[in-house]
Image (cartoon, rainbow, N blue to C red; front, side, top):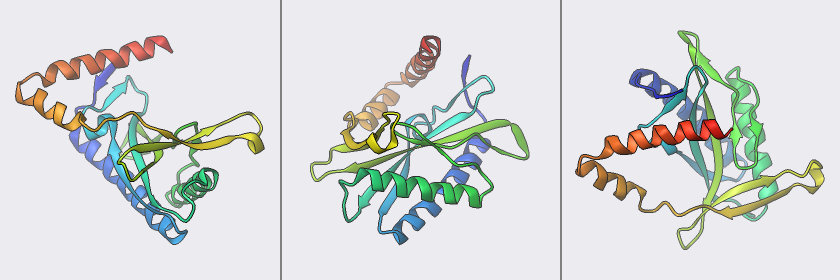
Length: 192
């Protein structure tokens, strides 16, 4: 059963820890010739963080690749980011991340003073073109690493989300959005 995470202090501490890891990542990437920035997206960015019973909380971040000598070399970009992220994680006594189709995901992380609450980071590698279109780096696995495909896939347009959320809040209907979102989380769980 999904519920909203109401412990604002915990969320602040967890997101601060995530920011420290990702700041270290962007600094290391810059030394490797990749200029990037990260930002919180999804439910964390909208203060709608949910948790399924005692399962880890997911914090979704985008790592925006702003400049790299060969932006089309997706395999190299993904590997540099993955290896560098793993280095940062190990420096913090954390396990290596998992490489999924569209993100790098940490193993559950917890603080010693609140071991009963865990969280994970889902890091999606993205870039923006000159027309302000966003693209997500995809790693399509084939079962043979030499034949895996890496490419930029155009992400859905979410340009008006902030203004729509603002308008909904202005007319006092934000709780309806929160209720619907929680219901959608439950539906997704049932389909798994």
